[in-house]
Structures are given as structure tokens and as C-alpha cells.
Amino acid sequence: TMIWPSMKHVLGSGIFWLVAIAHSGSSMAKSSVRIVGTYLADTNKHNNSSQSDTAGLAVFLSIGTVMGLVIAGHFFTMQSDQARKRKWLVSKLYLTMIGSCYVLSILAIPAVAATLEDLLLFLQIFALFILGFAISVPYYHLPSLVSANFPQHKALFLSLTEGVAYGIAGCLWRIVGRIVAAGEDGWAYGWATVALLIILTAVLMVEFLEHYYCRPEQTGSDAAIYETIVFA
Image (cartoon, rainbow, N blue to C red):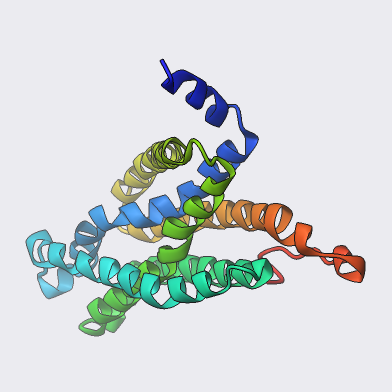
């Protein structure tokens, strides 16, 4: 019986819904680990690569995430009393995430893949590593940061945030799947679609950080400063 008041408190919060929707971008990037093997196999057919050969290469996305938690996560933690620097770091990681998705999109264009030949797989793995690095703080640190607004409901907030974010991401992966199945350029359009979602959710998340964490710190002339992901 105690769970219902907690759920009403969390689900009735505008902050929860804003963060949950914004979190869907990094959740979609994180869940791409499940389709990386298929992507690499489909775009490296000229090398006779099969899905069984490329499935294990998804580990580079996870390795990138671990490195991101060690390096970027350290800087994020060290800047606990500097909200604007934290926002700048998150902005740069989102931009890196978006750039990585567009690189994966470009590398999936058949003409580009045919031109690069043996270099293609290396560049794709490198882009996946960078994508994993960029996912780290937005995916793991930001929900935990916001959960402080729900001191008695942290676990429920984090669980529901994850559920809503992955629900949105799952619906969008279905759309991406249909795009990929449509033709040779499917993966190029698919990764471009992922990048578009991340752009929208990144702006939403950075605006949230600006409004709830950066602006309350500003006083005097600094109060007039208003920055978005474009200027960070």
C-alpha cells in the first residue's frame, strides 16, 4: 500500500516527466549495443563479414562507456559545486554523441563503405567507442543527480525514469528498424534518425540543467546570462 503514494508523488511531478523524456536519447544510444553487430555485418559485406563475426565488436561501445565513466565521470563529480561547468561538460558529451551517430550514418552509405574498404570497420569501431564514451555521464550520472529532488523516492524515480525512457527508445527503434529494412541506405538513415532524437532530447536535458541548476546560482549581472547547448 505504501507504493501508491510514492508512485503518485513521482508520476505527478513535471520534473520526472521532463527528465524521463530527455533521458530517452541517451537510453537509445546505450541500447544500440544490441544492434551494433547487425549494423557492422550489413555494412561490411564486401569483407564477407557475418553477424557472428561482428557481434563481439559491440564490446567497444561498452569499453567506451567505462572509459567515459572513469574520465568524464571524474570531472563531473569534481565539479559538484559548479553547475555551469557541469552543464558545459554534459553539452559537449551530447554533441560528441550526436557527432558519433552521424559518423556511423555516413560510414553506412554504400558508396562511402565501398571506398574505404578495409578501413571502414576500424572507423566504425572507433566511432562506437567515442559514442560509448559520450553516453557515460548523460546516461548514468544525470538521473542520479535529479533523483536528489525525490529524497524518499529515489529508487522509484530512477526505475520509472528508466522505464519511460526505454519505452520511448523501444518505439523509436521499431521505426529505425523499418527504415533499415527499406533499402541499401537504410543504416545511414537509421543512424541519422537516432542522431535526431538525441539532438531533441539533448536540448531538453541541457535546458533543464540550465533552468534548475545553473540559473539559481546566478546573481547580479550573471542572472541575465542564459545559455543553451548551442552556446555551451
